[in-house]
Structures are given as C-alpha cells and as structure tokens.
Length: 222
Image 1 (cartoon, one colour):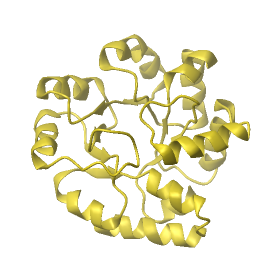
Image 2 (cartoon, helix red, strand yellow):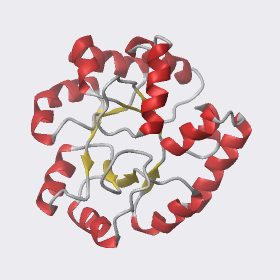
Image 3 (cartoon, one colour):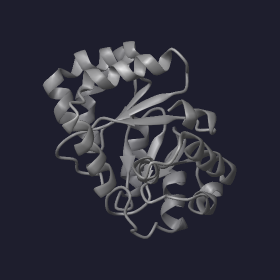
C-alpha cells in the first residue's frame, strides 16, 4: 500500500473479503478465498489500516459487502472503521433506497458512503445516486463483474454520468487494466479505479518496485 502511494495513487481501496461476492470477478474472488482461508477478519483489516496510518494519510476506502458488516454490527463497524483511519466505504450490493437507513450511521462516524452507477442506470437514477453518495461516484464502466474483458461502454454513457452527477467527482472502474486503458478515458472522467490488474501482478510475484513503476505509468497516463 505504501508503494502504491509512492507510485502516485490518490486513493487506496482495500478489499474486505467475503465468501459470496456479487460484483467481484474471478481474480478478486480468488484473492478473497485466499484471504479467508488465512483467517482474515474485519478486525484484521482495521488493524492493517491502523498500521498504515502510522506512515500515511492517503485516503483509504474499504470495499466489501453488507453481510459481514451486519454480523459485526453496522454501527459498531462504521465507528471502529472511522477510529482506525478509514475514510469511506463502498458496498456494491446496497441500493440507494436501502442506503438511507445507514445514512446517519455513516454521517455520525464521519465516513464517506460511495455509491455505484452502471450502464443500465437511468439518467434520473444517476442523479439520485449522486445526491446520496459522497466522496466520489463510482461509475462501473461495463456490465459484468470486476476484471472481466467486457467492452467498456462508449462516451454517451460516460457523458450521461458526467451530465447528471452534479455533486461528486466521477471515477470509473471495472475492466481498466493498463496505462493505455487509463489514457483512453482520462479526459472524460475525474479518475480511474484499478483492482484486479493489480492483484494479478501481486499474485504473479512481481516485486514492490515493479508494482510501483506500473502505478507511476498509470498516473502518468491520467
């Protein structure tokens, strides 16, 4: 994480592994299974955040699913996350209508709640989700799951999101893997989100230095 920051990342997303993910593709599913088999828990993850906070103030966002948080206790978890140094939470399966019940909990903990829009989201719903989200708006680039080769939607979709999202910066994720991918979309959005491609590099045993060089290439492309 510190090497990613040195490479120029503006925000780091830290995954909370779950056995039954909805939005994650094969790469992140596999990494989650490895983490769970090693006994990783939400408390472990918050402990890692505390450790990072000893050396870094980079914004940290947790991404995961609601079920483990409910088992932990939602209010307890959000407050513990904030005390650990977490800045925001992404819960892909939590729709905007259901997110209202947690708004005061997020607000009281001082956490950003980052919501997602997809190519099937109507312009009216994009505006609704943007108003409910804070920190940034997560724009899913294609139908499907993370790390897939699904074709990224064209400029009309991105333009619709940018037109209807009046409140938040728009960051695009899902299927972005290379500096070329990032460069292709850089002038249309406020940032890109890359997860599976990074995990693949770690799984291949790339050195910290190599990962840092790759992140710097992505940053330059943006």
